[in-house]
Image 1 (cartoon, rainbow, N blue to C red):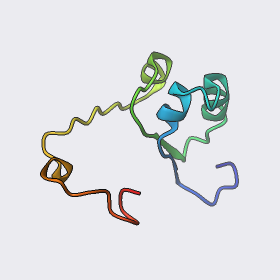
Image 2 (image 1 turned 90 degrees about the vertical axis):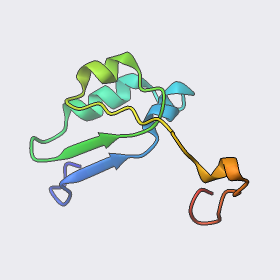
Image 3 (image 1 turned 180 degrees about the vertical axis):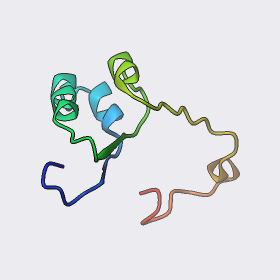
Length: 81
């Protein structure tokens, strides 16, 4: 993030990692404190903690309305697993 080589950093499923205590929230906040102004950081995953929601500029909550799993389609190699 600090190298100047990237304009966007995606921490995919980081909120789930926080929820299961695989990473400390203080480490995420320290990481965000060092973010250059020209870098966009995206944190994904369910269970976003309140401290990150307060810190964020944009929060989106996605909800499933329809999923092919309900029709019996199993997880596909390279897509869902």
